[in-house]
Image 1 (tube, rainbow, N blue to C red):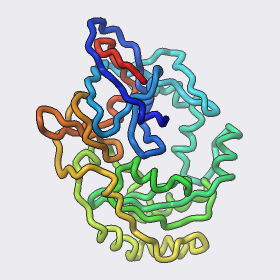
Image 2: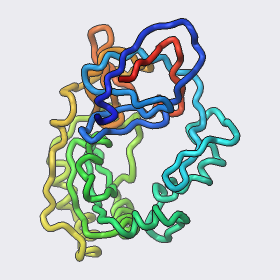
Image 3: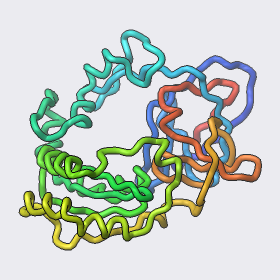
Image 4: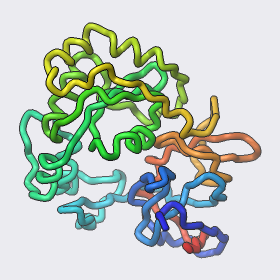
Length: 282
């Protein structure tokens, strides 16, 4: 059974001691979101009824080394990752890579970068377009994880480092490297023309000519909107409670008092679930 398909029952108790920390949010093989905690996955699939009180403070989640999460030795608070753990995190080096120089010191991640097939893509969020990199085998899932309205694979047949070089060139041409959670929670509406216009622009054409060997001929723009609930607007909420209506990348939609509300999933990462909610994981 995939992590997010495990039902979660929530009951109210009296002890308010923090017991479970939320380490990350992710999407399972069925492209349904869930929280990974230090106890068990917490499903965020449509139809789940949540009542999850979160600690007001954020705790450092430690760092990863060769795929293993290690606890923060400083027990730091205030950030999801303290400065010490950020320096020790081998995966963070890959996230910050621009392709110029490989700084990775872990053989496993180096092999993953240079031994796998990667793609460079463009993704539209309303009128915003960003460039990104993904392993080709999980490209569409990556678009759903990010909440893209439209996306297109524009370069392929490259390793991870070369993909970062192309991505950096696209960013220098004027495309975004990332969008903030706030921008995505605004739920801007997009149509496919914004992607068509970018693919026909002189700035994109120059990058495509520079990396012509790996450019995808006539990139196909794909609509991802069928993967998300049809919610045109939703006021933000700080509370992880209500019936799950669905998700759009990092934004979880909940029905609260008969109206849709938007909860930013990254806002829960690094916080603890209090024991006045006893979670029964099946």
